[in-house]
Length: 196
Image (cartoon, rainbow, N blue to C red; front, top):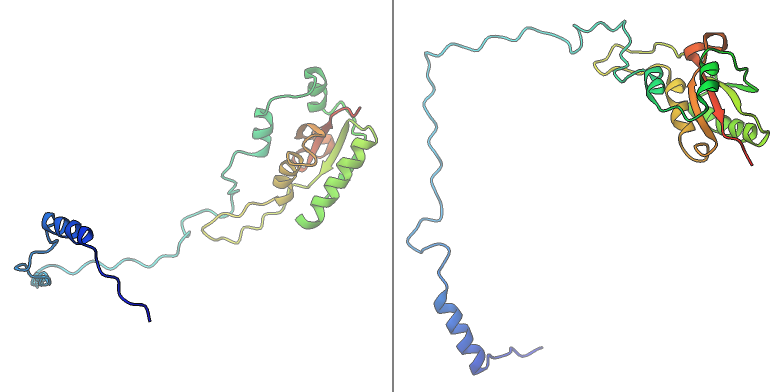
């Protein structure tokens, strides 16, 4: 067993000096326990609160309308800067350029569509294609009527994001909604960079 250590004369003098300068946090004469505040007597003459009428969250909302609260993809893409030649971009928007390859992602899940799209873009770039068409479909209205809106057209929203991420971002120059003759809002033109 370890023997207790005793203070030296210097340590004892230092401790005494510190103890003289300190004040206790609570003075011994003060009560340590305060009494609980008294509750006011209830006023019996006050009127009773009105009953809240029964309701369900979201009853007043028209669930038949599109609940896409963000700007539409078309609005976002039109606001994005044009990376390609302006003249070629104008012809592209009017549907005058013909896609050299196409992929149809209809009916695929996100897990199936992402690798399919990645492989398609990589193959198209290695084949030297400049303009390809990615068909996503417009999506189905699947809102279950809950208070939080459900986005429809999951692939339509996800494909532009995939095209802006690695490994495809370096290959893609421009993404825009296709002309009505190539699918309109249900498809995208993807203009690829020239490979060297």
